[in-house]
Image (cartoon, rainbow, N blue to C red; front, side, top):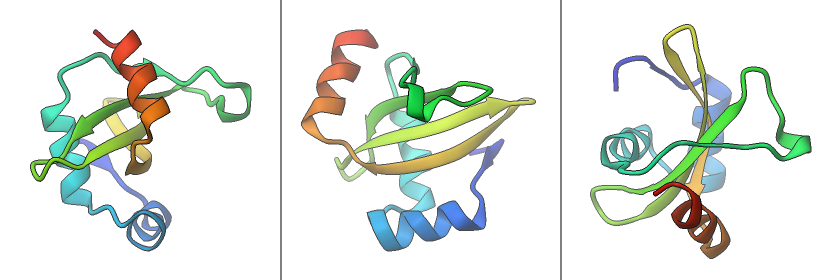
Length: 95
């Protein structure tokens, strides 16, 4: 995905902790059909604001993708298997 920035630290966390590949993240961006929600939780507050969504990889894995949009680029914060709560919140608010 053009404009997607994944730091070395985040790449390592994706691989070691979450078992998610950069290609899966790109697939989720491509497959997202709802809005990007804002993470307004106090302890996760960032400037610019963190946005997130839930989408499927091409293999059907539902991932929660968290990112910051700044200066025309998307900076990935994290990506991991979406739990039922995240899926519910996303479905209730993104469509």
